[in-house]
Figure 1 (cartoon, rainbow, N blue to C red):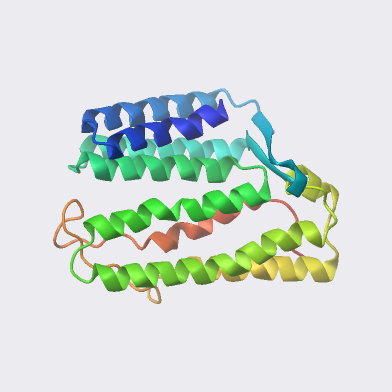
Figure 2 (spheres, rainbow, N blue to C red):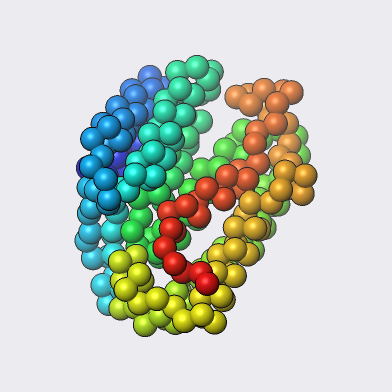
Length: 247
């Protein structure tokens, strides 16, 4: 069920990017919201709707997803936001397709139960934002795009090091959260892993006054409105890592 919730907006987003009518995207956003509302209302507590399949078993990487209570709340919030935006925003189908694609990647991020898969979704969720900026940014979008890419690349390296270190330094056989919990890091190793995550999120989530603002957009952003800096939402992505990787 969780995998369906992740794939549903991705499929509809891809169809819109291929040129299908915008109304199909509104339908996809509505179906995604109804599915996530069902998952939230029927959540039994703990980690529900768990799914696991080998991705790179030799490297200890698995397609592992599941919903705890907080993840279910984020699922519902993201799906509701995109659905309401699809209903009221006067945007073309391609823009809505990118929004649906971002929704699916964010859902995968909050449901991931494998640390390396979490990292992949974390980075992939920024790709639709880059495309939105490139396709719909206004004057000065080239500078903003370079700034966006620079922040993304610099922030990605310490996080990747922390992800790899969490497994290698703990002796865990896989990147699964359950295995990482069963193999806690020693105090010094935990400090360096925590520092890697903290540095990555500090770079990807700069304070509003320090973040390089995006340029005023052309439609659908409007001539006088600035889209929110996409990196300022990165802090919420730390919440799925609610396990003792740090000191």
